[in-house]
Length: 198
Image: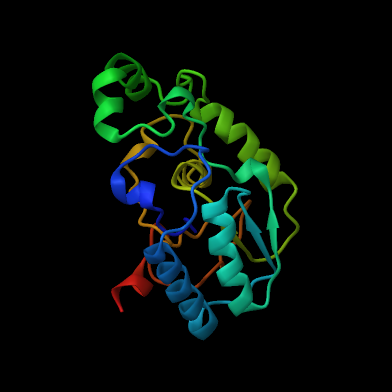
């Protein structure tokens, strides 16, 4: 799942690995998701989280409700956006148009200035996934990581994962390496945010 909202999310600031805390809205989003999972979600074996505050704080709220102790892993961090970190969306689009054009043309191999490419993120995510024990695990992470996880689950080597939109605290179910009955009966595998509609 994606972490709850931060004030920087709301302001349209590129965060990347900038360590921003949850906003009051983000805390409420996480509490709603925790309530949903406690009432009707499947049982989880473990709870993993990015080590960035917005994910750790979300995981702490979930863990308290679900009886799971979050385990932080820095490989679950958002894509490092380097020089773009902390800049408003408008400034990024105006000042880095050439870099963004290269990224759109080849998102997997184009590194942002001082940052990562999607291939870099994919490499660290694959390392994390390779170490997961069997079971059903809840992972609190970031939109970029979830997009790459979906691409891996679909067996895609290239393309535009940015087309996948993910609301804060939305759930995305990924079977890795294969678990055909994973979350059977649940609606929609990507970006499910029904708990925010209550």
